[in-house]
Image (tube, rainbow, N blue to C red; front, side, top):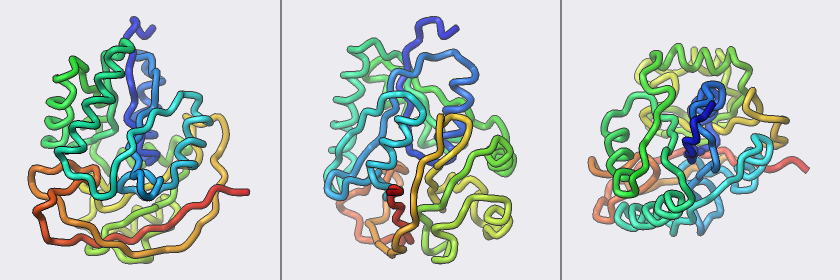
Length: 247
């Protein structure tokens, strides 16, 4: 039973979100009313991951939970992000949402940031896979459960072009350099999940072009969600693999 605890699930479309959602649904402690994703309004793609909104919508339809999106301007600063995010969370709270679920694993500063953000709206943050296992075991669990995913974004200084657009499997994990977390928890790579136990049917897709892009590097006070401090001048490079909805 969920004891009437209504929740929103923060959905990135990737492996950590999928595994956390799997555990949340299996546990049954919360009634997930919405999936929530942040979209780059200028590109109509998921912030940071670069996945087309249409594919995120297809995931939500296959999962069977309504999707709510926050549309952000290109390169939104943290102050603007926090204000817009707060407005959405206020709306959720007015609908009776009391909990917000995340797929974070071990970044203490990010966990604290999320908790403090939500306290303003009297919403409690929930982390179902937080330090449950080390990340090497978590990625093994993800694969053993039958999830299927593709790498859609990799940090260029740590992973080369050859890592983007690859199937997330045991070979991918074995090929990762020692300084890269097996789940990419430090932002080394991001994924799109197209099949697995949380889906009613697989998401049809095709691989598109691979491109390189640079963004402002986040400051120590910034979030891990692609938000950047406008005063920063340092750049970070990423390889992206565009995924196209199958005809």
